Image (cartoon, rainbow, N blue to C red; front, top):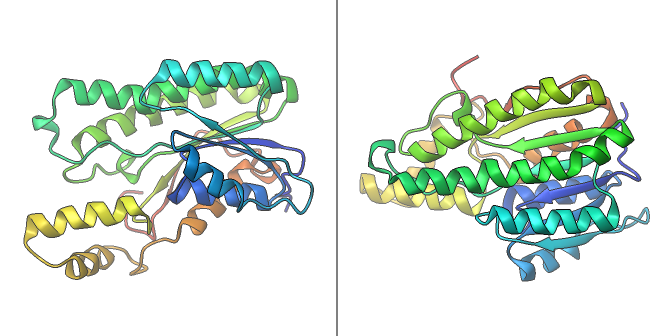
Length: 262
């Protein structure tokens, strides 16, 4: 199986922590030159020092706030004009705040749409020409299992994640002939700071301890544990590789079997 990414260039969004950081580390370990992309420059500098360079990989970082799509667009187009582009794009951004769909303000939906779909779209549009020229492209969107099964109390997130999934499926049809694949990877409960915050919220709402709320969450997962970020990243690494060349347009849960739908 060929999962060697030597000489490939990867742009990993939201790579200052959690799943995004794990994906950046995995792609670098597979030989890719990795560009980190997030709004937290200090955190990115720390991650940059953790990336594998034993095969001469060259890594860099970009800084932009994904809630400001015009800023993302400006930064990526400047980089593309200087470095041509990337064969691998990992779209990954922290999710909207929890809450019922019917209580969310319209502005929350607009903000989430800009954060997740519009910023992703700017990146894709900037990188497609380079991917076409290389006849190799891997667009991987980190979304949520809510694409298959809406999650309670995540009304805005459920809505926007579904929009991103449909956008990605459409792109898969449009770009396949150019050797560009587009896939969505759906994390379940993964041991990150965001999961801790979600569990804290559930514990407070149910008036139980954080420890009990954690046990309740694990009980819903057939494997009875949370994923490690590096386990999720391994899936992204495979989809970015030459061996995944005939996989496109899918929604792949990495959730320990929690999602009930097929």
